[in-house]
Amino acid sequence: MADSTSLCPAAGSCSSCQAWLGLPGMRVLDVDDEGQGRLVVRVESIPDLVGCPVCGVVVHAHDRDEVNLVDAPSFGRPVALVWVKRRYVCPEPACAGGTFVEQDEQVAAPRALLTTRAVAWAVQQIRREHASIAGLARQLGLAWKTVWRAVRVRLEQLAADPARFDGVAMLGVDEHVWHHVDQRKRGPKMLTGMVDLTRDEHGRVRARLLDLVPGRSGTVYGDWLTSRGEAFRSGVQVATLDPFRGYKNAVDEHLADAVTVVDAFHVVKLATSCVDDVRRRVQQDTLGHRGRKGDPLYGIRTILRAGAENLTDRQNARLDRAFAAHDAHVEVQIAWQVAQDVRALFHTPDPAKARAAAQRLLKILPTCPIPEVKRLGQTLNQWAEPLLAYFDTGGASNGGTEAVNGLIELHRRIARGFRNRDNYRLRCLLVAGGLTP
Image (cartoon, rainbow, N blue to C red; front, side, top):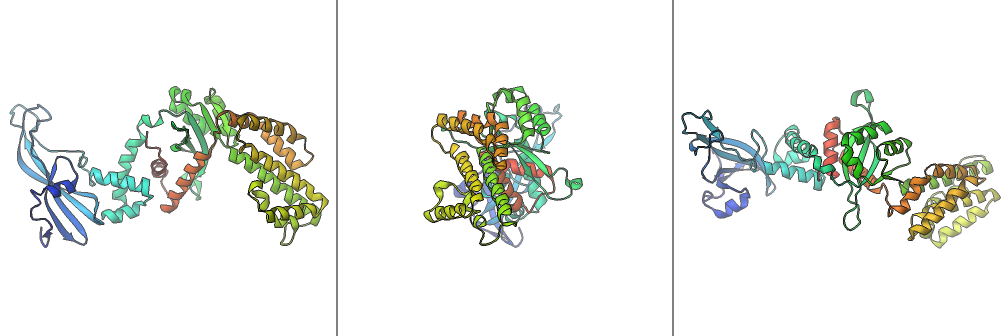
């Protein structure tokens, strides 16, 4: 190459260069510094007997073609891999094969711009290091579209593998907002995400995203379950979900043999929201305005959301003073105690005792004279069976689904948003483990 300097004069026979290359069956011809911070590595395959792909007769090389590829970065620099390919000719006169160029998908796929190793490196950088495509393009010395096209082909291959749906015994579902622009331009804002929450041999959940489909309804979830087939549906033993009736209807229709469990976090959230509702109403009834600085109930609004076991002596004293400041504040105190009782259900080590306590609450709360607490009791009774199932399934929850949503949100921020839902789905499946069987 013009104006280039060989970094290893003995590269053609240097065993250390071949080891550094890390491509089986290939050897380094030379390594040059092209300038502008890029390394150029010329390689060729180690000679071996090759048969004609048409007739099988041993062929011989009669020419060379140079193919320029982009390899994974090395020493913090972009790497160009020049593969000096042999062009073979079949000596059999009757063979229709003629000539052909050697191929090795361990090095690069036919007509690819990136090596197989570069694509694998890019996929791992996205999956493990939360890299952006723009950042990878800078490291590879390529354009954004060039990198994503190569990565997308690999992700589509992984997404099409039916084996990634095998062994799902616990299935979670949740909604997800993927954009905030006009729906006429990008379609539905809401997506429904299905997550594998199956426990491993140690009883730990290894959550992984299975799919993202447009829309948020029982019909959307049911259609996805139908498309997965009977074998998949029959394998699901536990279905976790937030208290959304649409998803519950889909589970009842398509996963009739599975145990439905409502998420514990959302149950506690309902109870905490009940406390806030009571506090706001009592505040208006006693003072005639919403909470202000210096008002007893407004001053403890954040303490009311904490667990009783986490409160300090000073915070407990503030609660006592606020509850005693007015006779009407007893309603807030009762609602707070109810929320603590609901929260304690999921911290009781004995499932049988926790289940019995939950049944008592389900029976008592709808009879409470405080309207907000009564409404909470009625809501929990509508979800009584999925709530009690929590204690029969070893504490199954939708927590892993929420964790997956957190990863999705992280990568949407890294990418500064997405305009293409198919690209968004593939990226989310990759970062949330959905492309790993």
